[in-house]
Length: 455
Image (tube, rainbow, N blue to C red):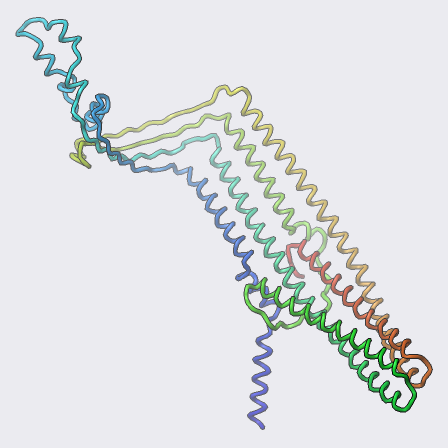
């Protein structure tokens, strides 16, 4: 017997530990929810875009390998010149000397006859290997402004993820509390079902002794079927909630630990909600983007300066005599647009208007959140009063039902009256569940506005 009790205790402990707590569900949600994972990839992509823009500060280094074969006169001469192998013979010197006489002035034809070696060269291979580095020195603050834009965009992506996390936590918490309300209401209905079973047995006994009619039993069975239907509906809703929780957590969930039915009212103030609200933070980040875009537009007024340097070698074979044929080029370029018919000015004005528009949206978002907060607080206060009232009404309905049940036994009232009073009791249970559910949903909505901070 001792070992059996220990085994039962272990089984109970294992069963209890297998029930998922809300805090554990939130941890699983943050790591396994597919929408949260997708939002994480968006952040990483935005960060890479920001890195790409910032990388423009460092310029770029390219390795260029060319291979060509041509008998075009310009190309062949250019190939030889690039590989430092051009000779006077390439200009037709051999033909020019052959046309002259010893110590005599060359004939006119020596100057006007096209040189065969220059104009009809043999085809030539050309291999050129080159390293080229280009770096911007000054871009009118364009690159730094774009970097600020991409940093703000990355921040917005992070806020988007925070909103997804916030929304999913809201959904998982609401599901847990909805489950608790369904279980509580189911238990209440099962208690009523037990009362109906007792009433059914009592009615049968009263029929046997002639103190009740068969129609009374039919009314009891009808009400019993109605309560059983409500219980079945609540059990089905619990199954649906388990499916939804499994979907949110991306794994099969079959048992959870139920939280308390009623949630405590959050303690944070309206100012704290406004300062932590994600929509307002996103709007503020969007304002930073439009402000940086003004700087981008204004960069068109400044000149741009870039520098470059390259080293290379060329030959008719790959890396042939590379050191002797090596060359380098260094330089810089300044570009400054002097006139473009006021396009730059229009772009700056457009950016400024977008900034003012976004600034207005931030103010509108702040006012909108303030309105939502006041509305939710008022709704919660109203629901608190409704719940307190419904609790008292339910107690009264239970006492009235018990009273009518006793009066029926004494043949002082009809079964119809008893069933009516029981229906009122069931109605109060359902109304109380709906009020509690609505209150919880409103509190979750308030917490969501405050970025899900629980105090």
